[in-house]
Image (cartoon, rainbow, N blue to C red; front, side, top):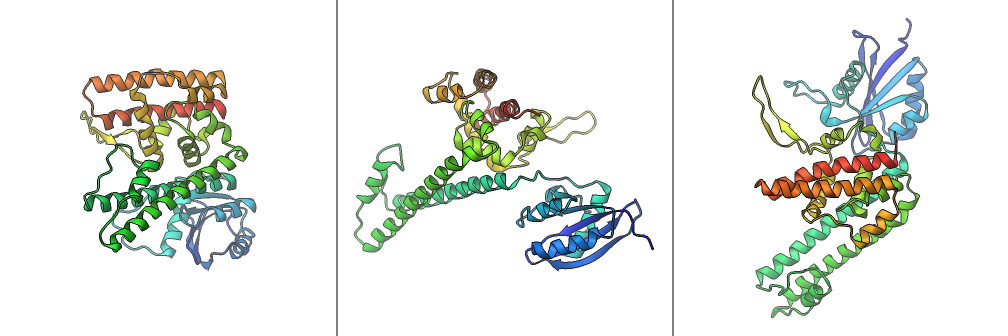
Length: 369
C-alpha cells in the first residue's frame, strides 16, 4: 500500500507527553491517532524523523500555550512547515462536551487540512527573551501595586493619612518610618509591609535597567527609539508595544492593528439595523491599557518639551513629521470629543485607537515592508 505524499499532523502538547494525530491529504483522507510520546525535544526529534521519512510533504500544528515555541523551532529546523495555532480562534462544535488529548490532536489535524486554523506570530529567540523581560517588569509592577495598596489599607484602618498629595516618594517613606503604634505587633506589621514595597520598587528598577542594557543589541531597537518621538510614548511603553506586537509588517494597514488590539467597536447588526457597542477588547490587554494611559497626555495643547526634543533629534525627518501630525490631530480630537460631552475614558480610548495607527506608521517608516 502506497503512503500519501502529503499529510497534516496535529499535536496536542503538554508538559509530560504529546498526543499526535495524522490526517491524510484530500478532503476524505483518513484521520488517525498516532499515539502519545514523551514531550522532550530529543524524543520529539526522533518521532519527527520517523514520521517524515514516510511522506513527501508534512505540515505540523499545535496550540500556543505555556510550552512555548521550542517545538516550533525544532520542526522548522528539520525543514518542515509548522503552525502555532491561536487557541481562542479554533472552531468548536456547540454540542461537543468531550475533550481528550486524542480528540484534540485529531481535531487539530483535521482543521489544519481544511485550512480552518489561525496562526499566531512566532518571535525569534532574541525577541522572546526581550518580551519575557518586559513581562517580568509588568509582573513586578503589579506586585508593587498590591504591596502599596496593603500599606494604604493598613494606615487608613488606623486613621493615619499622609498630609500631602504626592505619595510613595522619599518624603512619604520617611513619614511611614516615623509612625509609632502602641502595640509592637502593629509596628512590626507596618515595617514588613513597607519593606515589601521597597523591595518591589528595587525589583522594578533592576528590570528596567536590564531592559535599557539589552535594548541596543535587539534587532527592533530602532523601532523602539523611533516610537519614543510620539507624545506619551516613553521607553517602557515603546518597548512593551514592540515586544508584544512583534513584526509590524504583518499588518497591511493601521485598521488591522487597531482590531488586533481590540480598540475597535463591537457590532451586532442585522438587516437594516446597525448596532455598535463598546470596544471588542480582543488581543493584548496590557498593550491596550498602556495606550489608553498614554492617550491622557493629549489633553494638553501640542508642544515639544525638552526631553521629547532630544528624542526627535535622534529620528528621521519623516518620523518627526508623523510625530507632530499625531500631536496636532490627537490634541484637537481630544478637545472636540470633550466639547461634545463624551466621558473622559471614552475619549481616551478613541485617542488610543488613533495613537495605535500613528505608531503603526512610525514603525513601518523605520521597518519598511
